[in-house]
Length: 239
Image (cartoon, rainbow, N blue to C red; front, side, top):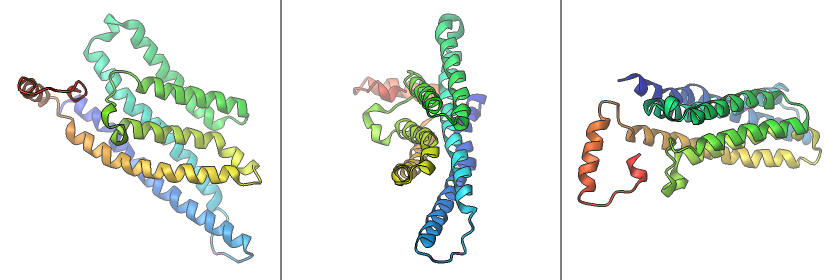
């Protein structure tokens, strides 16, 4: 395996090692927190410790930050590997430097979003983080699978990342709102996010199987060109 092949494994490896274990722990803590809240509301004693709520919040923040960070990593690998392979630094230096700046600004805005207390600043940093993800994801170096967007690892992943950004934005509002409206929004959206994470596991595995190793790529491309002489080939499948 070449260096680029190993780089392809960074994104899924980190996801398996960090995201999915964290997801399980956060879900468990969420169930404990809800069960404790309902028990106290009914006036019942519960063996669930009071630390379950703060732990759910703390680990949930780590999960949200990790999802967005790994989304950035997943975008960085194909963009910069293809730009460097095409000598974009000398051919289109402004685009290369512009994308680098977007990565830096997006990466810097993420921890600032997590620390921001003011609503306006949270909105600003969320806009910078989410806008940066969308701008980077729209680059031609990213494989989108537009014809099957509902099965696209990119579209499902970027939606999950945007939901995590939104979770960070409304975190403080959940505890300020006595009507529990924001808590209900949080529960609904993050229940949907869980489904997206499961889908990411499936689509990510599928995409890894479809990506040839560096030494295999020229042979597969040759076979592809040969097959295109006998039947039409879509532009998207060439990626």
